[in-house]
Image (cartoon, rainbow, N blue to C red; front, side, top):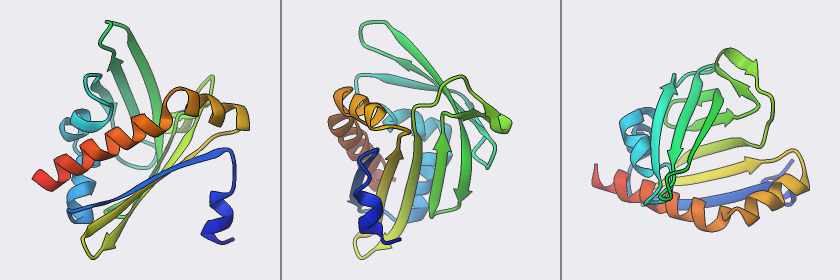
Length: 158
């Protein structure tokens, strides 16, 4: 199946950007929890990584602290961790591949060498058109564009 066919699935959302840093540096921004916390959510939202084992089957747990004082917890599982190339995680599972009660998305991150550094892309898969639509209404485009810019700023400064 061609990439163009994949992009036509209305359940999937996409974001991509060229980051002027090597895939190895962008990888660090994912692999090191203290770096991930600095760009994972749009500022002024604060992310705290409460659990992270960056390996297949490893847990990915965050506490998201909103400016109004509300907190949101999430837990997921890394499915694939291919150094400097690909990260796949889902909220359908928690650490050790243990099923969660509700799934919203699975994310495929790809890092590819580019003449200017790294081509970073994210494909966010949803089970239904409704879930994808809800994610759009939650501000997917603005939020993921902002976090991608924050990731680029961090990676380009390292």
